[in-house]
Amino acid sequence: MNLKGRSFLTLKDYSKEEIEYLLNLAAKLKKNKKNGILGRSLKGKNIALIFEKPSTRTRSAFTIGCIDEGGHPEYLGKDDIQLGDKESIEDTARVLGRMFDGIEFRGFVHESAEKLAEYSGVPVWNGLTDNYHPTQILADFLTIKEHFGKLEGLKLVYAGDGRNNMANSLLIGSAKMGINITILSPKTLWPDQELITLCNEYADVSGGQIKLTDNINGVAGADVIYTDVWCSMGEEDLVAERIKMLAPYQVNDDMLAMTGKAHTIVLHCLPAVKGNEITYDVFEKFAEPIFDQAENRMHTIKAIMVATLGDE
Ligand code: CP
Ligand code: NVA
Image (tube, rainbow, N blue to C red; front, side, top):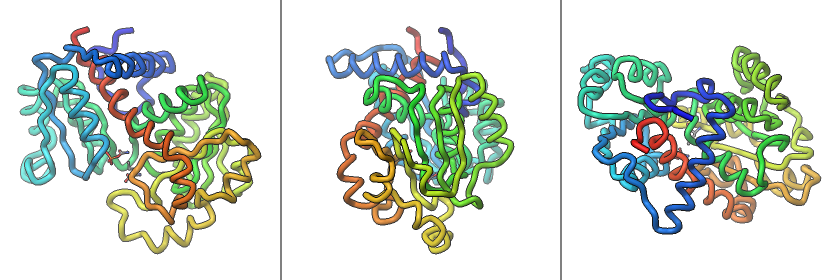
């Protein structure tokens, strides 16, 4: 499998086989690191980390993943550069592309990531935009595979804001990999029809199923319940409205009981607002898989950099 030179902007651009390849590479890199073996795949490579929004996991994962493989990461925060403000994204991209070998971008507008990729001429990795969070999905799927030994045929229920970056990306990833995904959310927060149509096409190929429902009974049979904050970064002024809309979709003991399965796990991309989308008790009960998921950000992001930019 050769992914050299490719950007990673959304999972739409990656086939099932390519996603599987990245998951297997991440598992290998994880095992190696646990055995004290680090690679030199990014030796001599300089990587720009652009962050318009804050981050704990994504920033740390790109930084450590890059250094573990012998590369040099450079953090460019929102107050450090004048991206799209005094200097256009196109010009910034052309400058960074002359100096750096790869660029991570976390920001608001997804088109900014696309422009960076188009104008820099180097691989651009999406570290979260308003619409998509594809690197998170690789960590989620690695965690699910470690837990259940497979992805295909499992039922994943995403409860909460059904049209945010996480819901969109889980929908795309699940449809590609043959996971049966249910978006459990009020109708006003369902994903765009265009994305649903596209994902139904992916699901037709993979054999997965997509369901959208605002009925809490949709959790029945869930192997994985996934949730995320009710207000994403940039939406903080919507808190009161969202709490009202989404309270019935909180991941709590009652919801867990409704799965009818003893082995259901709960995942969360983090950071969590406990007491809103998930109760303190349920969070602590599933702390093990949730923090495996956080650790797996690093192994999967390392795999993306190694696969698209590395020398090995
Ligand atoms: N899950 C995630 O992307 O976390 P950060 O916002 O801390 O990077
Ligand atoms: N939907 C959340 C994800 C955080 C990782 C946000 O965009 O803030």
